[in-house]
Image (cartoon, rainbow, N blue to C red):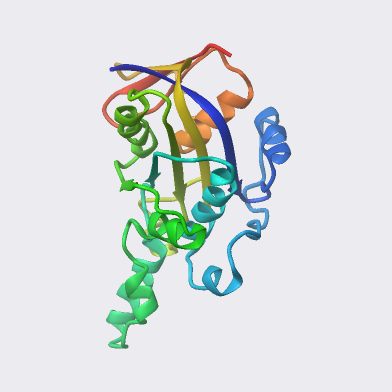
Length: 239
């Protein structure tokens, strides 16, 4: 598979990283302290923010920053774990024979964040939500192609994940505790990606795909490879 597109704008949030300048410094430094406090959101009304998980809060905040002055044709949300933190809370509650919170139950589905963005922004945007393990971001890009190839279209792609409960740390212990990164995509040839066979030469293998891409994008890496599930992805930047 081989495809191209352009990035019109981006925004991201994670531990100690709340502004574009922070991320630009992050991309230049070899080590980042991921134990720094998570940033506060500023665009989500407080009453709605309090009901959201960290994952959804970050995803919606990133979306709100990017949809300003943009007319979108599609919004795609990708996440490996979705509302895992809230789901674990529900399972723990059931295990103790306690009634489940209606809010937790309502907001535990995988497309919670995408639905909340349309509600908070009061915009009727076609949305899609998907998960493909480590390949979630890459599959989100593939999902966007059908719209981008139609011509002068814009797609919002947000990749995010929240805190993984300690009970799962034996199997899952990500380097990045919680994050959301979003891109406004358009048709173009500035960025090219093609699938390749598995290779040991991986760019930033400990990062989620979307953050590994952002790291390379900010550093203007001409060519790099991001790890996938059964194949890897070779990128070329023509910036």
